[in-house]
Length: 578
Image (cartoon, rainbow, N blue to C red):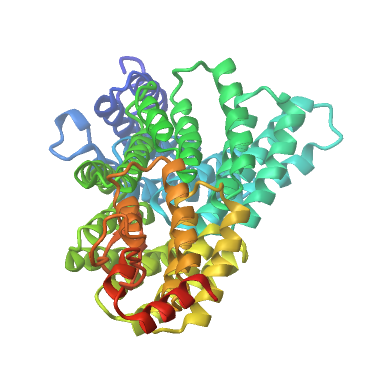
């Protein structure tokens, strides 16, 4: 400043460097002030002071954000369009907005930086690609998936074009660098396709990324572990749990050996492994892994805050399955607060948590609050994901479940059939979600006394479940109960008893205790409790609901008709099938 004065490019460059140091220290207010001051100097010095904005953050009553935007709006048009240092400064300001979870402001500033870079450097420059990556990641986090897809595809085109220019040259380092960036873009494109529900496209992109990463780094590298983790998420979503576990354990082994057991990335790996155990009803093991993930090193980074929220959501899922609704609600509400504060209320991830909270209300027979939350989630998902996304279908499933519980069977059936079409299109015909929805359809058919149709529907669901899930899975036990109910309505009591006992075996080997509602209901059905206790038609747990009150067997029934020979003969004839 003594040599050049306060409005010189060298001063601005030093201010930017001071901002970088503050940012690395986590002093984001000071970093923002330095970047904004640098931006003001750049705007002034590049036009020799004519018509430039004279602002110093230390003496201004405006916030750092408003100073930055004032500089953009009032600075020289020539400067904003053609000075690459301004683009770098803008990107730094945008990164601070990300740290503060101000994603919309960050997107606006990144957009301005991109315009500056393209006008000065052209469309195919590595700085342009870097800004496209930063913008695409925010669009992905915010749930602007179509925008994210466009940003990542544009970034990919930049690196492919740059790679072509250096092919055959002696600069192998630069060629390798571009190849690495291409692999990273494939990974981000895969994550975006996964979020959009395009699982097949996502897997192809992950495989392309893995091929490149393995050829560059070998198999024992954090980058290859990241890709395998994402591939495992697809396998888990497609109910290929053995393959998912193989991917997750590989990622765990590599990450522990290269980054250590306490590295923040271990949190996601532990949650993913726990999710497989959750899907297999190993709730105790799943809960241990979820709690362990919360003990890994957690920095004040937005993605890690969201990771903690995701873990809390999984913990809530386990509490829900174990009928511990108060603890489930606390976990869900804590996760929801973090997501809304970080992502905003319209993000698809927020909608998923709303569905979880609504499900607890439904399990408590609070239909009004459940339906209100489901409808809110549905509106958000339809706007951000579209009406063919599997998350949207899951919300429709919950709405149909509540409608069925309230007696709206026609409306529920229409929604279940719509969900069935979406799941079949996204997952294929042999998937647990398809089986789950078939069970819902079968329940209504059973309520309508369409016994042949319900039996066919339940049988198809059971076929899918037995090929995609372990024998002790709770869903299989539920389907045994439903098929048993059909046999009861047909007065085929021995067949019903056998199926109810198979259901009990599934429940108990799956970890349910005698006091669990599922177990208690089946005991009532086979008459172990005696009497005429009625089955609550609104009972549901973990999304399971039986819409009929059939299926209670009273094996003491014979005593009630001992003096009626003809009735006994008729009863025994039905009982033994003779």
